[in-house]
Image (cartoon, rainbow over all chains, first blue to last red; front, side):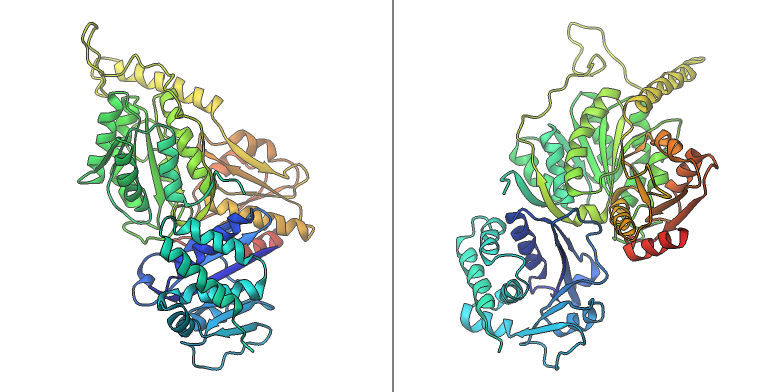
Length: 179
Length: 351
């Protein structure tokens, strides 16, 4: 098994953090993992992204051309990466910010109003990233919700209130019923 | 889950490896993509009551390392390609004064200011001198975050054992990526090497002198012969190389650093298609594992070298192969990571 995830959105939407959380969850489950950020000019204004690879075997390149999962938190990143997805891949997109109809042949697409859920249910719009990650955990079933919640504690260390908030966001995304 | 396994960036692992080795002084100057190194050190070294100093320039930083090293203090500096160019004079002086030091290069694209993406275009600079004079720099090329930690840890001992600068030749990809790292739980290594040269105050003993200016008739020649003996010793003892599946291989891939990870993955995929591919990864770029490559150069084999430059290490591979097998090359310049599919296509074309 090798899962290759690109998480993309505006700079400030927490795409690096969301990736780090998935990588930490993979560590919690004793899987091999790499995390690689976009760094530099593209972080200012345009889209930022991070690539997470989770595998049972040694991982080669930490960067992938054709990922198996895309978590797109805004429309520009959906446009940027959707053409690179491989057959049978999964796209989770933030339907609060993507207004177009999203359909790609041979790719499973799941929309979740992550920004609205983060704003109304969690009370913090910045948690939209982990709402989307929660939906990903459910759809893909490679990482457990429990290890992702444990990862929150590791990545956020002593920030008790933020840990609870982010865990709640993961749960909301996980339990979202898109039908 | 192993509780000593911590998810961290390559640049942070480099710092923690140095700290675990008992590095007492870090001198640096900011440049992307190694900025996490001075940033992390500015916090950690102060916490540990060790020295962190942001110098006014790269030249100042490497010469501060020189000064600390004179007193027998474990010291390091780091930078990325253009900044490492500026340090070359200092590295030549370290070599000329036989001073131990650790220098880390988190390579970015060049020449000139280039860009901030990961690259491997400083192979020539590192392994063929960089600074002036007939000297060598021991060079370790990590290809994972764990190796950033381990190699930096080991570099201090190597530097002291041979009284020679050691370069960690990394790149922006390894520096910026995160992977789980197993952290050492033992105490920092004690310095156990000959310290009879250290300038630590000459009360009750004869004064010592460390210099690279040797004007007396024949003195420099004699010193260069002495260095040669040391470099031969390093060649004999310190070559490190990773090999896989060379025995039955028709094609041998050679790559170092991050490109070797892509090569290894491409090799596995090629094997699954029935193409017999083997893999050689030089870990020490100097001393270069020429014997391993020479021994592998037999029969109807083909060599394929993959690098993130337009052909640097491939020259050393050709020298080692001595014309006995064809040596092909796949390079990507300007800060782009080698693409596994492209490499695989190249392997298929050689079959």
